[in-house]
Image (cartoon, rainbow, N blue to C red; front, side):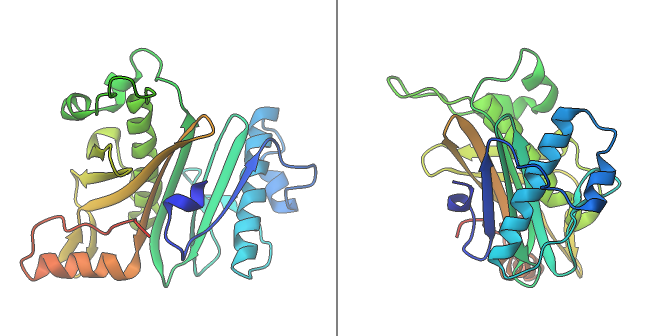
Length: 242
């Protein structure tokens, strides 16, 4: 399911349920030795998926350890992303020569708890959320917005090493073609004297899950910032569509 939302250069692996015993390597075991069981299961499921995705690229299994902010630290030459929620985990990886950044997120396809949308969304985002069409299955657009912000952050942080608050990107959805755009409200990733100020993403609802992805192919990121330098419209997007 997740691979449908990403370029062909990205390898994806998914798991429904829990990873088998022994899914963690020794270095990873030490990270979660004192964690609660739920955290151990989530950690193991994500790492199991990561190694499956890496194997599709012909790469050997290695430990995927967390960084200072909990982000997965990928081997040199790779970019990737992890996500997990109850009963589901996924990992995506790509070679850094082809993809600059990846972010993925999966959430239960249910409305957010009361008060959460107001805490994570800009007023303009709340006002701009799509309306469910009469007679169509309702979509939890508030949860979709939260998930999109998670995917944007997961792509942003490895690129820049800087945190990104919920209020630091404005998300807008196209409900007809399964895409969204994230306009950064803080200085973006820079290439020379130009910067990437818009991420493009994709979304879907599958198997009771809201899924969002952001992929920034290297060639398109370079094209976008070079377009800005040449006087193109600000925020020329690096599309995530395959």
